[in-house]
Length: 568
Image 1 (cartoon, helix red, strand yellow):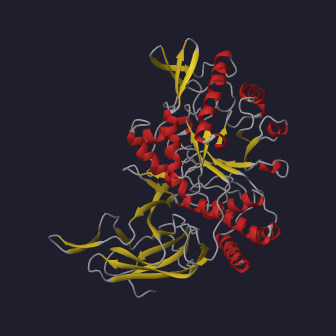
Image 2 (tube, rainbow, N blue to C red; image 1 turned 90 degrees about the vertical axis):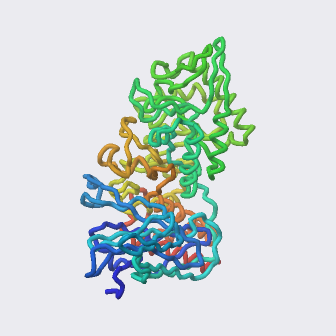
Image 3 (tube, rainbow, N blue to C red; image 1 turned 45 degrees about the vertical axis):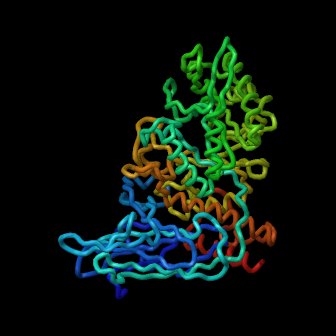
C-alpha cells in the first residue's frame, strides 16, 4: 500500500473503469507513439484513509510534452447485456464522458468561516472517495504537433486542497518514436445532425449562436480523425417517420418563379467555410431521395411568390416529372458553385440510405434521374447486399461490416460502416457496452482490407428512434432504442455549447492511428512485412476478428512501434 492517502494506478486507454472494481494489477509504466500522434492514458485514484471518506485535491502534471487533462465522468447504463454481445457487463455506472479540465490551473488559497481551502481557478475541483474508484484521462499531443523523439517522463502529483500537502503520486514513461504518422487517407464521417444542436441548445438553426456551437462540435470531430461531414443542402431524409418532418435544416435557398428554379448558395458557403476552418476536408451531400426505398423526395423548402413553403416531401413521387425537373435544374447549378469553390471532387453524393433488394428497382430508377449529371463524381450509399454493386447500381459501396466479406477482393473502392447492430461474434463497435479493445480493433481491420472510407450514422444524434423526443445522454445514454447505448452519439453536449468528448471517440481515433502506423510500416518495409506482423497476432483478419484482450492489442501496437523505429 502506498504511503499516500490517495492510491493511484496508471492505466492504458483500453482499461474500462468501474467505480466499484479495483484496477490494481492492471497498471502500466510505459507507453509509446509517433511524433505527431495523440497518446492517451488514465490515472485511476481512490482514497485509503482512516481520517475521512472524502479528500479533495488538485493535480499538477510535470512533463515537457503537451498534455490535455480530463476528469472521467460516469453515465448510468441500465441495459448493457445483449443476447449476441459477449462483452458481459452488469448495469451500473460506466466511465465515458471526458470532462475538460485545465491542466496545471493556478491555485488560489482562500478562507471561509471554518477553514482554509485551495481552489484551482476556473477548473473542475477533484475529490477522492473512500468507496469508489475515479480517474483522470490524459492525452499527450492532442493537436498532433511534432514532438521531440526520445523517452519522456510524465509525473502526476496530487495535493490536498486543505493544506496543499502531497497526497498521491505516480509517473509514466512515454517513448516518442522518431517517425511521423502519414496523413490520414481514409475518408471518415460520423453523421452530423444540425437540428440536434438547435434542439438540445434551444437556438435557432444557422443563427450566429448556432455557428458558435457548430464550430465546437466540428472542431472536436476533426481533432479525432473525422475529415468528412454530412452537409444538409436539404433537410436530410434520415430517421424520419413516413408522413412526418424533422426540423428544417436546409442550406440551399430555393426560389420558384414561373415554374423555374433559382438557387442561393450563400448559406451553404458559410457551412463549407466554417467546416474547412475546423479541419474538415470532404463533404457528403444530404440524400437526394428518402431513406430505405428512394420512393419520395426529401423535404425541400422554397420561396414561391414571396411565400416560404414546402414544395417537395412525402407526397412527392421520387421519379415524378416535378422533382426530376427540380433535380436537373439544381445539380448543374450546385456543381458550378462547387467547382468555383474547388470542392466539386470533394463531395460524396447519396441517393437513398440502406436500400434493400425489395426496393432495388426503385433505387435504380431514382439514380437514373441524376446519373448522367453526377457522372465522374463519387456517388454511393450504405448498403448490405453485393447485388447493388455487381450490377453497377452503386459504384461506391458503403457496406455494413457484417456483410462486407462478400465484397473482399471484388471491389476497388470499398467503404465500411456499422450501426449499433454490428457488434456480435467479435465484431468491432463502439457502443458504451462494448469493450475498448473491441472498439479499437477496427483500425487493423480497415488496414487489412484496404478500406477507403468509413461511415457511422451518429456523431451527435440526440433523438430517440425516428427522431422522436430529445434527450440528454449525460442523464440517459440508453434513450435511443434502449439497448443501443451510445450508438447514436460520440460526444456529449455541455451546457455552455462546448463539447464533452467520449472515451469511445478517443479510442476510435487510436484505431485510426493504428491504421496509419501500419501504413507507415508498409512504406518502410513493404505490405508483406506489415501483414506478417498483423497475422502474428491475429491470423487472417476479417471484420469478425476479435481483439481478444486489451493486453494483446497493446502488445501488437508496441511491437509495431518498435518495428518502425528499427526500420528507420
